[in-house]
Length: 223
Figure 1 (cartoon, rainbow, N blue to C red):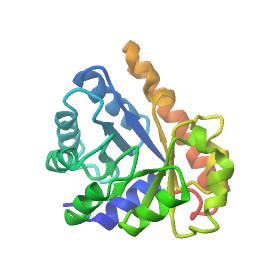
Figure 2 (spheres, rainbow, N blue to C red; figure 1 turned 135 degrees about the vertical axis):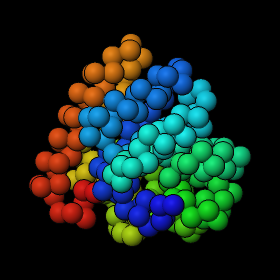
Figure 3 (cartoon, rainbow, N blue to C red; figure 1 turned 30 degrees about the vertical axis):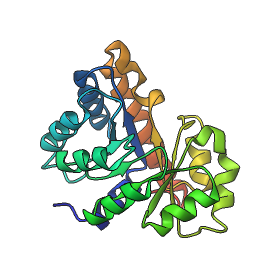
Figure 4 (cartoon, rainbow, N blue to C red; figure 1 turned 180 degrees about the vertical axis):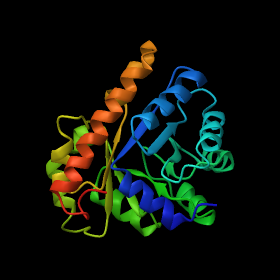
């Protein structure tokens, strides 16, 4: 079983976590594979996709021998969904908001919990309940200046920015202090039309940019 500290390190170093949704189990599964083929190492399979737990289990099995790929569950709103995710093999849990009950369950099973936060109060509460990576969401509303301002009172917080992240503003998010970013539609959107090749091309573009940023910025800034 993957240790919690190892999982946290892999999420941080991933640079980009693909937020994978889908209108069907097949679409979600193929979207995730397309992302991995393009070099993305972190997959957040959301529970808005049909049979999400089955997709997670299938992906965990497919990549069980790949130490670089990490499969997580997203849009986890309650403890029931969190437990189902963990039983399916999810290696990290992501929520659009903070839930102390989900945090406590994840702590019990030593699974990283990445809750969505929008205010300093949210972030403080999440950190108090053991969150080591905090999802700043929605990034498009919070804005890049907010991320840099959060570094003052919360220098210990590792921030994952989700919502409003694109290839064009990727550098700005990292420059402001993001540890990792979550990217959904702008990465996996073509899957809705069955164009998984384009999803892979998008993934390559994002990961190429992240690798450039890892050279341009100190290690503590990017992954």
